[in-house]
Image 1 (cartoon, rainbow, N blue to C red):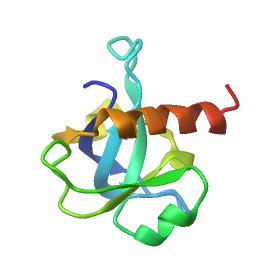
Image 2 (tube, rainbow, N blue to C red; image 1 turned 45 degrees about the vertical axis):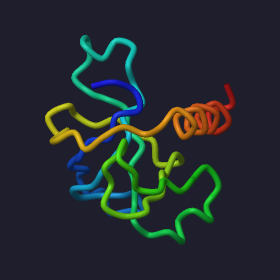
Image 3 (cartoon, rainbow, N blue to C red; image 1 turned 90 degrees about the vertical axis):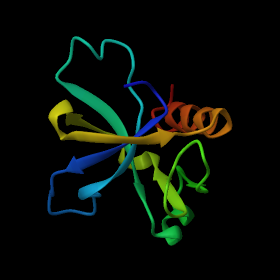
Length: 111
C-alpha cells in the first residue's frame, strides 16, 4: 500500500453522517504503515453533490485510477481503519489530485 493508491475498503457503520460500507478509498498514510495495524484513508463517494462540501474534490475515471464512475474524495472524512478492512487495489490517483489531497489535508488539519 502506498499513498495515493485506491483500494476497496469496508468501512464499518457508525450511525452518523460518515461514509460506511464497501467503497473505494484513497490511502493517505505511508509513514510507519508497517508498524501499525491501521491505515489512514479518504473515502470516495459517487454522489457528485458531495463535491459542494469544503475539502472535497471530484476524481474523473481514467486508466490510472480504474474507477467505474465519477467519484468525490471526501477529505473531511479522513479516518483510520483496520488494515484487515482493506480489500482489493483498484488503481491510483494522479499526481495533480494527490497534491490537491495533500494540500487539503494540511488545510483541514491546520498544518
